[in-house]
Image (cartoon, rainbow, N blue to C red; front, top):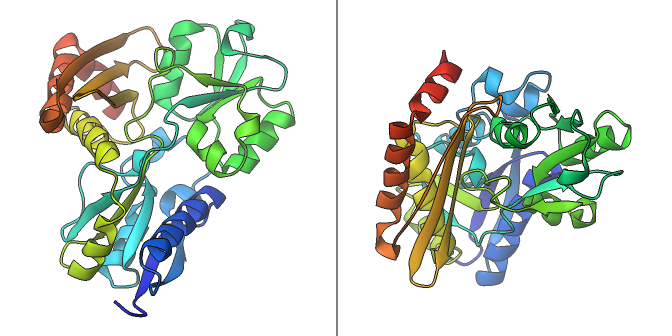
Length: 308
């Protein structure tokens, strides 16, 4: 392992680079003789900035090029926001480690309002997430949900320029970039249930790269991994991509796992919700159960309409 080099595939946004540097730092702290190098790449999701993500196909928009880098041998590992990672992996690749989860909540950000409840009925709210949109529209049917793309800095710049009354972003991203002071209100999961995998960083590598897998195993957070496996099992059961109005959030409560799931129509008129407990060794079946319950309620109609 002496002087082994680990090449880390990453997107080039400030947040993606922070995450990749964080993984590099964790690896070097755990294995001091290790060397790391960032392999910076551009994904399709980074190139298309003038269209809502849901319109350009949500599966793998921010990971496909990184995975190609792994398969071609250009990089040894790829670092992802877990909420961007599709359910299926290309043959030969897998998720080797998930780091301890940062704050999973959604953040309400405004310059002239102290909370979501203070917003006027027809407020201009920026988000490109159908999941956030359906939950906000349920609460504020008259709100104008406006598309919001670009990196965190450019999004905040648009708010400051007066293009929006408020934004909804992930708390974790703001915290990691040293911008937690911009969070006006962290939204409770009862108001806005987080995305599957939100707040967690995942590390992907080649299945047959035994040495790298052993290194990454030391970084894996068991509790976060358990919660994410339940959430991703629900997503798989719903056949959901990353840009659909699906929310799922699991938490360890004592010696049990508690999970909530949601599917909603983008206009906020129909929201299906369910929740359940399970033993810690039943994380995957917990997610599958929630998916089945949501489909039985009628969630498949909402999801099918969006796919056609």
